[in-house]
Amino acid sequence: MSGIGDRLRSAAGMLGPSAPACSHLDQARNVDPRTDGCEECLATGGTWVHLRLCLACGHVGCCDQSPGRHAFHHFESTGHPIIRSHEPGEVWGWCWIDEIGV
Image (cartoon, rainbow, N blue to C red; front, side, top):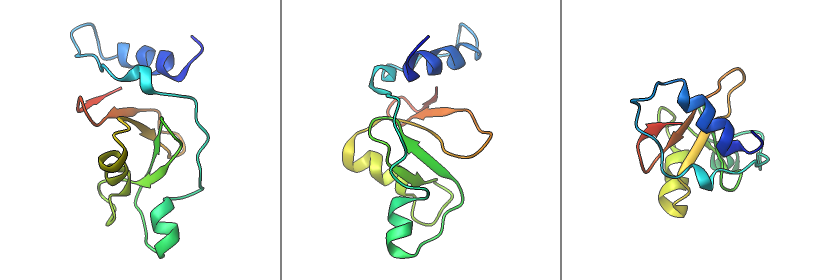
């Protein structure tokens, strides 16, 4: 397995054969984070709870529990469907469109 989509598919396989599959994993890329924190919060002096990394472009945004919800707003404005946690020790992803863990 070489690409991020393959690794996400492998991790999703741990959910079992009856788990629904994400149809957008082909849009996941190996990306470098564009910032060390939430891009928008850093620009405005905001705060975040957890960070999420867009696997289409490397945007780092804050989670839905954060005041700005910038990861979700990034999805709304770009249509980039796949994110993963950008927190140390966390290995999971999410598809905004299919509303499923990947």
